Structures are given as C-alpha cells and as structure tokens.
Image 1: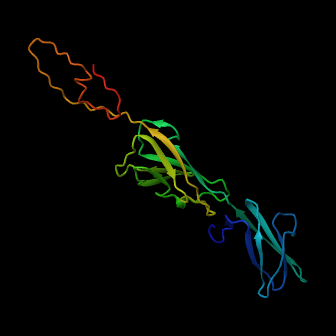
Image 2 (image 1 turned 90 degrees about the vertical axis):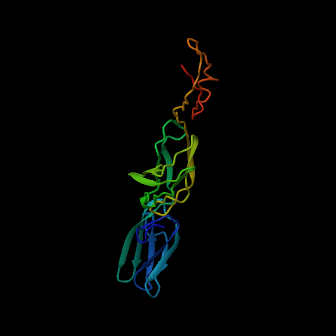
Length: 232
C-alpha cells in the first residue's frame, strides 16, 4: 500500500502478525477501551496473528497484550488508515473562464484529503492531457501545485474550448491511493492582428478615387480571428 514498515496503508480491514513466547495467549485492543477486541494464541514458534481487523480512518493506536505465569507484557503500534484518493483541480486558467492570452502552461492544484499526504514523486508529464499539444515539462511549485508547460517545442493551443484532462491513476498519495480521471475546460480567444495586402489603383490626373471599403481596399485583407475589418 505504501512503503513497507511505514505503518501506513490504504487497505482496511488489515491483518496483524506478531511474535511472543510460544503458546502464549495474546489479547488485542484497537479502540482504547481495553483488550477486548480479539484473542489469539501464539504457535510453537511464538507467532500469532489477528486477521480482518477493521480500523478507523486516520491514526489508530493498536495494542497487544500477552500474559503468562510470569507476568504481562504489552506493545503499541500506531497504524494509519488512508483510503481516500487524491484529486486535482485546474487553477490556471480558471475553469470555465475565457482567456485572451496563451500562457504556454496550465497549473493544477493536487490535494489529498486523507492522512497520508501526496506522493510528489508521482508528478510527471503523464498527469494531464491537452488535445493538440504535448506536455514538455513540469514544475513542482510546492504544496501540491504543479505547472505543466506545453510550448517549449513550439506547440500552441487551438482557439475555442480547451479541455484539460487529469488522467486516471497518474498521481498517488503515500498510502498508494491513485487519482480518478476528471477534466476542466476554458475558452481561448486570441485577438490577432489582421493581415493587410497592398492595393494598387490608377486614375486620371485631378480625378477623385472612390473605392468601397468592403469590396475594395479590404477585399484582400484577412483577420485571423474572423472579426469584421474596417478602414478609415
């Protein structure tokens, strides 16, 4: 679930294995109200187990107690249960917003609602997908915020609705839980400069030049955004 021996797991119920003197009775306490949550007897090698023990979400002080004719000994271990999955939220650009400038990156805020915390080592280029561009580089900005750059190789977003997909199973927490797929959109509207083409006209000396703008001087000019051109 996480790293072996870190007392952190996403699995619940859990199994406990311990060691004491051979053939000794062992009692279990998982809620602090006494050793009344299970009993076991150690085998000839001194090993005992408690299987399918359901713990609470978060930190649990698990205690075992063994008793024989000599006396009683006990041991405590804190086991943390985290079954909650991490998730991400697009923060730059703001979801459902309209932007007029392309930054060359998006930013996602990753969070983990459980006790484990994010495994920042799982942040990589595969975390998100944006149609038409490749993620070239990530920057861990701290506190779960990650910047994903896509324009280092010259890629650019298409204008219109842009969908950012947070791919399933790419970001994990330290208990081994992985994110589910989600997506968010924003609208890119770029106001690009129009392209003007030179016009040539000839007329007699002292004659007036009268050319309609739409069918004349603007007829061979183009606006990349599709906006109406005017001339003055």
